[in-house]
Image (cartoon, rainbow, N blue to C red; front, side, top):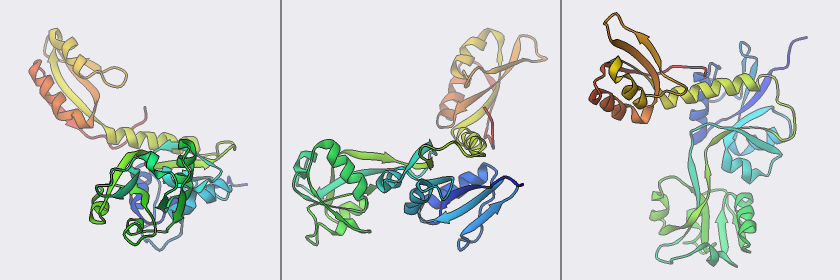
Length: 285
């Protein structure tokens, strides 16, 4: 009897859709080419992908209809679904904030008894309860920034990326972020890990490492090796190999991608030569 396919929900549209598909492709899984496709079977990897509305994914996973899903942390918490975060995926980062009319100088304490418009009622309700604040929530499906101007609400709570849309609506942020969100892999709460989850997480970890790190190779004299390897300690330890040139070695190590230029400068200053930095397509660590 053939093993059951691992069923994974993937966002069908929106800001999370492209990032999820790209990450899965980099992890070696097939992805759809036609945005109208609702299901794709990757027989090689034993996975069946379902393309669903991002807001619905946590519900499907929480009900046990699907094994796993990729959605936003904000959508997971807002849904109240019986599902938990398995792994953060490093893309789709957003902040969830309160905003009030510009110049009003609001604080979170001022929310007591006020009307708050939001598309994330569950998330905001939990935050207010934790903060000991009683307010009236007005659920809107979108464009909540217009609600204050139209007299429907006193303030709003919404996902914020740049804040430019809020400024155009005459609003300004106040208080600390309600939460920081990003794309996450989720699983139904309280059930055993499905077959294929360990492999999926291992592959996703490899993608994240390949994105965050680069490989540096360089030559350095043995009397400067300690100083050079202090600059490039690697994740565990650098690889050091003898060169045909007496008194010299070749060094290889992983370095943070964002610090690559600075690290190359430091290596040059300590006397390293033939410094090369290359990208990583995939890895297992």
